[in-house]
Amino acid sequence: MKKLLSALFITICISIIVPHKLYAVDVSAGAATWFAWINQDYTANLHQSSKTKNNPTLFFGPALSLRLNEELNVTFVYLYGKFSVTEDPANDRKLGYKLKRNDADLLLNYRLNDYFKAFVGLKYITLASKRSFSTGVHGAIYEIEHSGAGPGVCLSCAYPITPDIFFLANLSVFSLRSRQFAGYFDSSITQQQINTKSIDYGINFNPAIAYYIAKASTTVSLGGRFQHIKTSFSTKGDPVAHGSYYNHDSSTFYGVTLTATYSFTIPVSQL
Image (tube, rainbow, N blue to C red; front, side, top):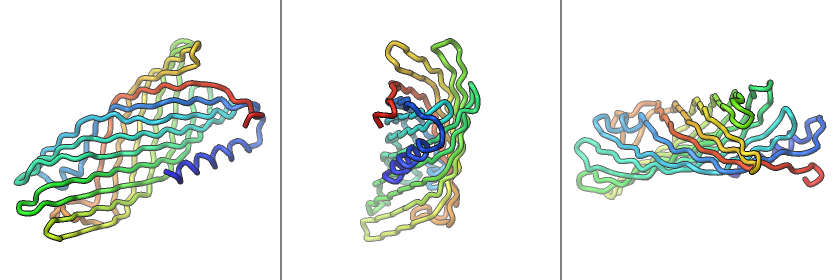
């Protein structure tokens, strides 16, 4: 996350010194939420006959936008949440655990015309879980930490329905260089660990309706978000998969989004 914040600062500095007249920076700051569900292939690969229940969760975090001029602005959105997952593997006890996820986007966007913008930027994702379960005689802990960062491109549309109400839609694709750590620790003093390089390919679609409250200088948007990620591992193998784990995995996240941001202007002389 420190690297991502550093990249945000560098991007803002570079944007400011781009040759153009800049008299003020328009700032929008607020909070973003995402009530999301998840579907994963991983459990089917790990326990092919298991039943898994993924309870929806609320992601939340800050949303920031800096409008530098009529064409350029920088946006940063960070979301964090924890899924409650219950697995019911065949011939084993039911187990429950938390699946923690961080999702951050840093984007520099350029206005193409009155309705469309093009974005380029960085995406950062982490996914981590720790599972405690019985292996028959012994207890065991299985940990997974997956993290990735890389570039993405996005096309955004904003269409006015009324002077204060807008239809918004964002479509983006990204490719992340990632790494996954898996550790299996058995109370019988059996320990297995594996670090695997991987690449995450993803697509994200976010339609919404936004309402601008002029008296409060606040924009509220309500919509949905669909995100699909496929992970390709450079090497096969998993400590507890017993031969049923493949060299790829995929996850789908979907749900309802709600964002509120307050807008104000900072004269350049104050920067």
